[in-house]
Length: 150
Image 1: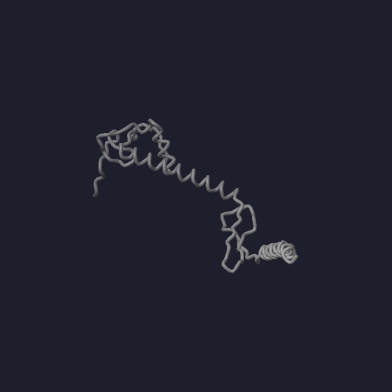
Image 2: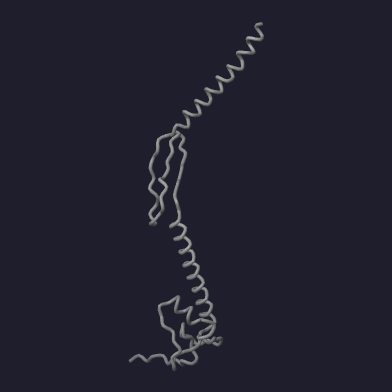
């Protein structure tokens, strides 16, 4: 029959169950609360249970708790950003076609729906402006030519 290891509960770390020289009180500096936020355990000050935590576990709990908070803050910020985001993506193609989305509130985390829009009349407008400039230059040149002929 196998003998179980005898644990001296007043000398072990509540987290790693190791006997260490450098121990801290588990129920000070909110260590127990941080531990319960990181792991699905219930840590209570119960008579007879270990009430100390080793320095290595204190550091591990602190890092874990800080990481958990960072993930939660980042998630909250991203969700708020995506919720309020109005998407309008315009990509100019070399063949003068535009790809753009319809502006919409992003109510889910799905990527925006893209649709192809035919080139707009801006190129026709540019051509008309160029034609007007040429006509203006011709008008200016005509009076000068008439004066030179006289």
